[in-house]
Structures are given as C-alpha cells and as structure tokens.
Image: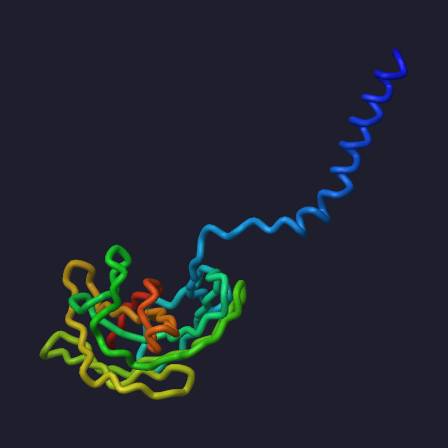
Length: 200
C-alpha cells in the first residue's frame, strides 16, 4: 500500500471512531421536535395491575382501583376528572365524536401534571343501593368515593334480561384547563368500569 492509501484509511477510521465517541454527546445536543401531543389515562386493578377489576358488586362492600394520568402535551397541564355513573340506556362519552356524557358529575377531582409527569390516585369506593323486587330494578342511595358520600338518589338500573344482571358503569372523564377560554374543556379521554350489582 502506498502512503496515500494509509492516510485515507487512517482518516476514515479516525472519523468513524470520532463519531462513535461523540454520538452520546451529540444525542443530548440534537433534540428532535415532538410530533405527537396527548394525555394517557388509565384504571388499574387493586394490585396496581391491569387485572383483577371488581365486577360483581355487593352493597356496602369496599372496592379499590387506581386512576392515573400521564402528560405528553409538551407543557404543564391542569386537569379535571369528572366522576359519573350511568345505566345501559343513559348517555356515555363518545370516543368517535370526542364528546362528553351529558350526565351530571357526581364528583370532581383536580390534578396538575408537569410535561412527561404522572398523576395517580388510589380510589376506594362502595355503593349503597336497594333491590326493588316489584319493579325489578336497583335503586341507588349513594356512592362513597374515598370516604366522601355522593348522592345517587336519582340513579336506577333495570334488569337486563339479555345479560341477566343489573349493570352500571362508573366512568371518569378527563377535562383540561384552557387558559385562553379560562375554563375546562373535555379532553376526549375517559375510562370506566362496568359492574353487575348483585342482589339478595
């Protein structure tokens, strides 16, 4: 090999080694812009896993889950979670239309999360209800959520003969504070659990 060929080989090897050594430092300097901005929302079961969710509910029995939110919006966010309950015929939020349920909120939870921050809340809840045999329906008195009694006196569930049960849906809608409008707006996210209200 000629001296010129060694020089080219030496420059090539030196350049590759320089890039390999400098790549961790360069990756810290070169920040690619984000292309997606969103919020995650979830419910985990009592063992902090995506399993073991309560389904068959007994009157005045306590159940536990975890409600969580993770902020990927690129900025600090102020969230509001509306707690709602419905039977099978009442209004549900729509993922397709990104609209909230028209049902009133039973309880509101506010949370702050930094960009890439996570907010999570353990929830313990129980239902107080009565089975009205003559009407074949379950009538609710209250939902107790983290030791706060919430009035449910207008909530009723009729017998579902197709699925053989009294089914209700406890769900959580995510709203976000819009600084321009100075109000909370539905963020298009919701999670919920369906329950079968057991009767004696």
